[in-house]
Image (tube, rainbow, N blue to C red; front, side, top):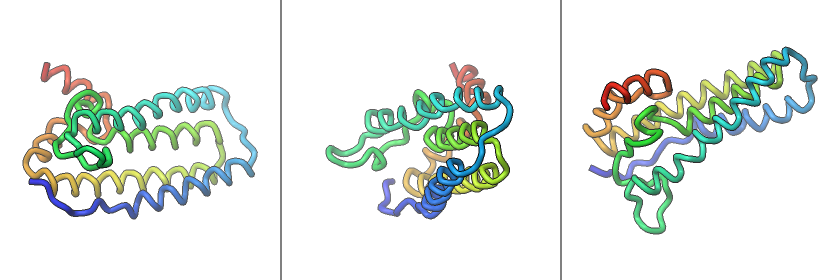
Length: 163
């Protein structure tokens, strides 16, 4: 049921523009705040990296991409490993990265920009799921019922109950 429809990237573009703005603002504003929150932010960075980069491998390996095509052009729903816990591990990783930056740069303007980025990433994830439903049909709808979009705790609990 593969279709040639394009993934809408408008929200991702908004997120990228705001992230660049965020980095500039974070460098120009004082970074004060609670040390424990900065430590949480530093902890979130490597966790975010796993959620961002490991899916590159998973999609390429299990998505039956044609030789020479991007990992984004999967021919099959990938529902194992991280994808058996959350449907959108990369967007979750980007959101964790932004939350980590917000914990490190504790000021109101970075928080406002960070929340805007998180909202844009959430909307982008929803748009991509609509694309996946059009591309994969009932198989993806079934996957959506089994696996939560971002909730890691619920995803782990559901995975354990399926085992």
